[in-house]
Image (cartoon, helix red, strand yellow):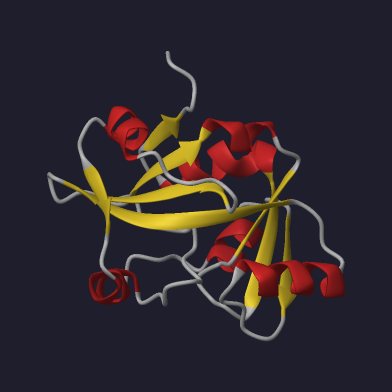
Length: 160
């Protein structure tokens, strides 16, 4: 298992988070309804589980509304990456498609984060379970990644 218990980890590190339990969510439409029902706020994120040509796995975190630009992902990671097929992703992470956590991986998994996320106030995501939603402060994102020991790459839409 390459996931840490994110709720436990954040409590141990005294990092602010909100955790909401609800019916399983598998679509952005369901997420919008649940967000309204539960009353939490923040920027909705999505995570893609990627694998590089080298065999390295990555968690790519971006806005739910944004399409991944694989040329920019290659620039960020320094190698060509592709979305991991569902059966491999489930075997490696024990997660189901539609509820892939952006955070909480052991250090062997590198992180590619959309640089715009750091400018948000709160980030909303599924913590590896479709029946939970977690909210963290965007300003804590880098600290969490650093504490978990994940290598961090920044994904940027602008030309450097």
